[in-house]
Image (cartoon, rainbow, N blue to C red; front, side, top):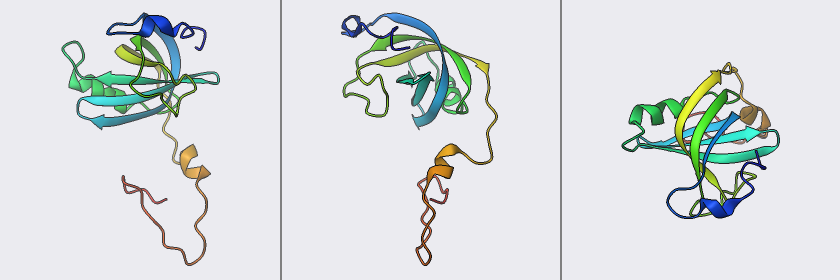
Length: 138
């Protein structure tokens, strides 16, 4: 994936280069009814994708993109642009993909326990159990 996005100079301005690539969804989250963020990975490379409602992209598409399970294989059609700020959570931090079309090739099964849950430290005895914003225990 990094080879596809090496030339960042053409991503300046309103419209950047159009790309089509296959990737695995690392994370998907809905920010609002009109905005969702996806993290795509290919090997060790990750890049952030933005799914924003517009004349060409519906709110249903934004909602759909936010519900794609992690580890699902997708084909992405999009435009590469420079973000306002570097994306700290992606290995390709100086670029992001603005999604125009998104196809699921294979949907991953949702596991009963996620990797993020397994990586959390076990609470110490006597320590209160806290909850995240979505109600899941930390």
